[in-house]
Image 1: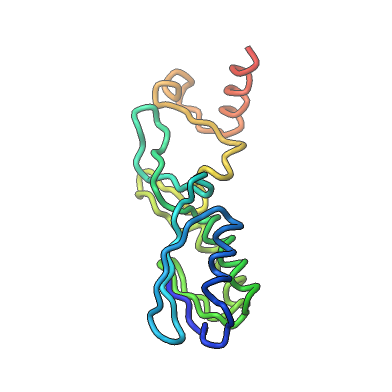
Image 2: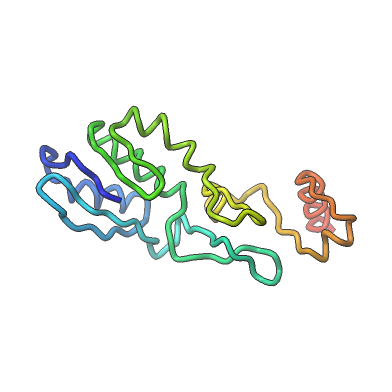
Amino acid sequence: MKIYNTKGVTNFIGKLCYIAESLKINLDFSKVSGNCYRVKLNLGPEKNYQRLGFMRKKDGSRSKVNAVCWHGYRDFLKELYLISGTFKVVTAQATYNNIEDFYNKFEATGNNNIGSMVDPLPYRKACNCERTNSVIVTHKELAANNYRLDPKFWINKKNEELIK
């Protein structure tokens, strides 16, 4: 991503590093001009905000990739806009002209499909950070249960299997 309108912000790099440290992510950044920085978010050692890939493994689960998920970008940008509401941020998903523009647009970027048409994957669902109420179902389990696709059915079924 590129962050513009940084010229008047004192200790901008220190503030970026503080945000990254508080979120437990790593940053790669470089100065593009006197008013712009290129910033890349990377997973930290604890792998908070790890993104999942669009490809599936043999068991039906999604593979992990070495990238920061949508929630990580969201949290980073929220903290960034606390420093100054006038930053212009250009990402692969959207361009945010200021803090108001960010809050008007960022929710919609979570619905962008990063999977395929056959196996869609919304950007906000491609992560490990908020997977508390989900289950993984294999194609064999689907076939054995008459191809039921109701999420409540599978969550209840998997919870019952854990209790047994």
